[in-house]
Image 1 (cartoon, rainbow, N blue to C red):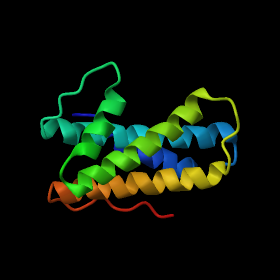
Image 2 (cartoon, rainbow, N blue to C red):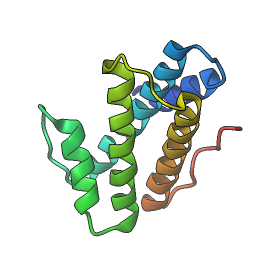
Image 3 (cartoon, helix red, strand yellow):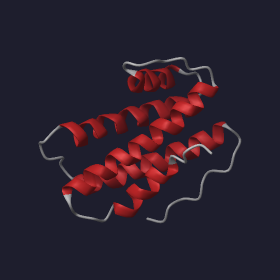
Length: 130
């Protein structure tokens, strides 16, 4: 049975109100990796052929260049989420309004899962309660 990447989003959502900077940064990363993996699987099913190194940016660029506006939006939001994940994981400078950024990251993740469901003619996963 394949790994259910949504578990990452559920973990991030569950930890979102913890005020510890390390936990908040972890939330940013877990939400991003959920979106990255479900978006990558969806793109692969649509003939995306990107490879390492640089697969993350290749994916988001491919999405942004796609003719489908839903996929373009996934690319735009995915790239924004990627940038924030890089800040959270690799930069030791404070992230301004970190709690707000966590809320935005989680919101983007749920929006992307809704877009992917729409693209595939499926019902979106149950929204996580704010």
